[in-house]
Image (cartoon, rainbow, N blue to C red; front, side, top):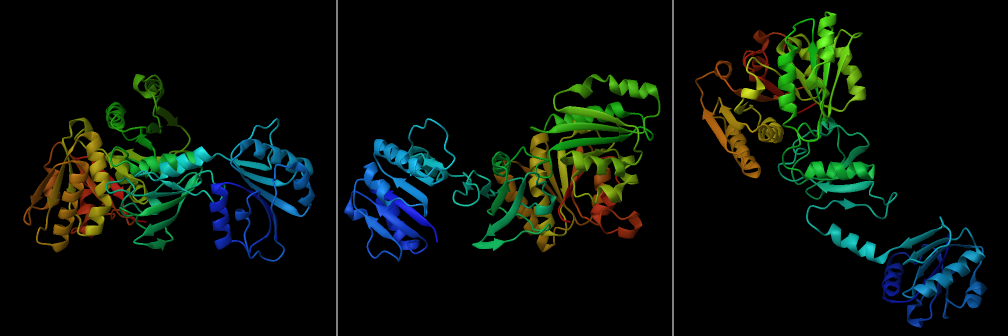
Length: 468
């Protein structure tokens, strides 16, 4: 049991004593000192005592001090009295832990003294009452903002994301509060709008994450990661100029991200020289490298996963088809280029998935990505009689209002969506990415739109992870 000295006066001291008496009076042995007898509690627990005198009288205060006192709380309105009491206490015991409401001038630093600034405490408390301001823990941990609770708004890039696909470097999602209940998240736990996330990490990092969660557009590829990376195999094709231009066009529509070019298997010195002196590869937040040693895309990506915060992978169709099972199992968004260049796009298209849950999970990326690129959104409903399709369409209409976007909807149970997609121009397809990836041959999954779509070469496609 610790022995605690409390030196009290003023209205704050009175409120503090009320709280202490109601909740914690029996936890320690106390010595109460106050010039105001009304601030001295009745019915003291064993080993506690009260003194009614002016604590700024150093002689009287020294008489009641003892080596057994481990902590002292000074709650006084008068700054001069606080300073006098501090010097009396410190002269008696240099290691006594002192907590003081208010501040006093110090000649030297004192690690055993905690001074609480009243104006700062009040302003911080008022600030936390503002709407859309995160709550930070004050009374556990370090109390420096390393524990934060953040609400997920509708339309947030974190809504409908699985916890496992969110890159959590220097921070973690440790709990989710939903419908007055606590969820201890697993890798596959999906974050929903209106969830409250309990975050733990570096304070500065948490404030950055808070702003990302609160943003309703313009964040992709967050929360998957920050780096956009183009992988290009020079042994397969030599038209890298076109892919550099498309990658830069795409990257210039994103905010606060980084773009990296990785060129594999250079064939000759002329190609190396062209890349090394390319004027477009040295822009702000743009980097590049030529990989001489690793010839496999898998080996290069495994290396980059340790060094980069990859949020979006860019591949041409040939490299995608060669490594499709590997790249589709990474849990990282992937954009596959098509014969139709990105600069000419006018629409993004979603073939409404069979599962309403899948439609919801990719919705935030559909609207965020399309908004950043200035694309209109087209929904293709291949089976309009399905009840879950109607639910999915209603959901997208609601999200469209949040993002202030218009939807174009096409209903058909006759025209095959794959044949329809293959005839489209100026469109990019966005579709859910399952961990199982794409089957090795389309004949194994003729009825699966996602599997068949992956074999299209004309239109660009964005694969969005939804599960593990």
